[in-house]
Length: 199
Image 1: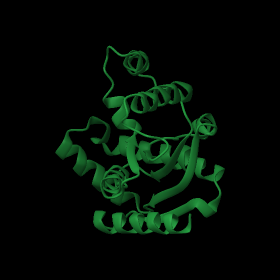
Image 2: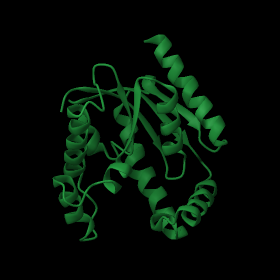
Image 3: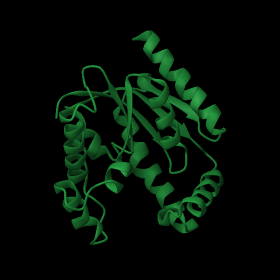
């Protein structure tokens, strides 16, 4: 995979990463939003990536970091090969990767992290309410039980949040994710514009 530039978006489940990412990609020419959840859910079962993912998912196992990065790298390579992403002119907004310290280390030599947006929600009840509502609307089984939601929040706070310690605080912008979606997007867009003005 070629060297690529990327912005990262962090936040607990239900913090609005996907919504903000899609909006930012829509209003900025040089950004392509890429969610690992969308990559995994969209894999063709007949593809190499699909078979690899299924071998873990069907056994009820979490996809190991090395395999996640392997699937990610193949997917990005495919976007570049089919002219759906131009690393010379565009940057990714990565949502869901790197999710662990190990993943951050694995992509270090190929992904140049420009800036990181962190959507913070200190009140877990806000996250739980959002995810249970989303589960009812979208039928997403991973959000349907409060105990599962709490486990996902704990997973984020122990593993994913630790990833931030690997990056310089000067490239991290923290945003109040408990605001309305429009307010969160406004703050992310403002931070993105400030970054571009400085660079």
